[in-house]
Image 1 (tube, each protein chain N blue to C red):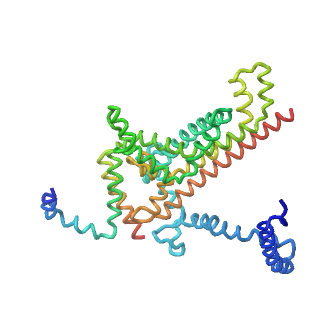
Image 2: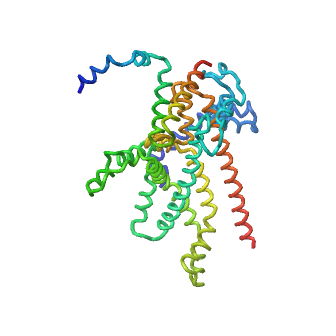
Image 3: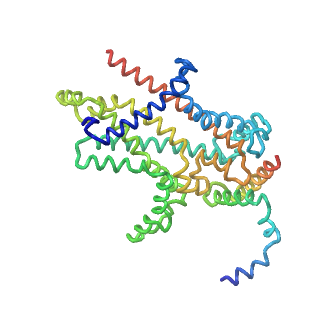
Length: 340
Length: 66
């Protein structure tokens, strides 16, 4: 339908034209003043200013905080202390035994985070892959199930944690069902191993949909004729999966693995609301240690928290480098196969 | 029940009253709760928890003096 026939479209077009004419005059003046090669900077300037103020400046400030002491917030009032904060964090009799460390909670948090990342990412990627494979088939209600699996991703982490806390607390829904079935109630969130299990479970429940979607997109990009050819050659379903699906899905799997790992290392909000890091320090992770040291304790030890976040940033940088290396290797391997 | 509670209040140590107004009281409360929680969860013995409470409080007081 043309704009001349639709009055609403015509009105919108004329308003847009008027706005463009208004912008046109100062833009031409700016272009004359700056010159054509430099006008591009003007377009990226707002983004650069925001990134600089809210991303790069905090990184620089974090560096300074990590190498300064005291409890003052303003950098100018903080004395430079060199590597003191890092030495405090790494002051350990035996790195494998957190109780011998000066900052034992930091090391417990590191080990908890490493264990959480390995277990959570391993399980989540496996479940996401199975879910994507099922949702890629022509099943009844496929659209509905795709929505159901993706829905938790849209929820706020605090809402997710509160919903599960409501179910898992001592007087919660799950224990009510167990008591109704004649079983004894279980301390789901105050018994260390159960609290850790539910932290992993809730985290998988909340994030799996996003990774399922990435894998589903990868599955849909695999040409159907490859499967048809394999079927004609008499390949079994397992052989089709291991020789066609998995290799062609590898770039997506690498992305999912590394994104999931980075997210798992940064875990905080859901678990903090669900268990508060307890019982004891059973579900205390590295970001919670940073938050508590820097903001929740009576004395805000910003330097120690900044040093810990530096350690976290370096480990995430390492993970990202591994991702780049793996992705390059996968793509190089794929290109080699395509050429062959 | 409330009478029992009220009856016990005068027997409290004066230090217990003073700590309520102490500016670093949270530097004592927080490690006490956290470390005893760790002892209850079986992460450390009660003796170790008491040692940790002492060192945590010392560290916080030292940090506040910087």
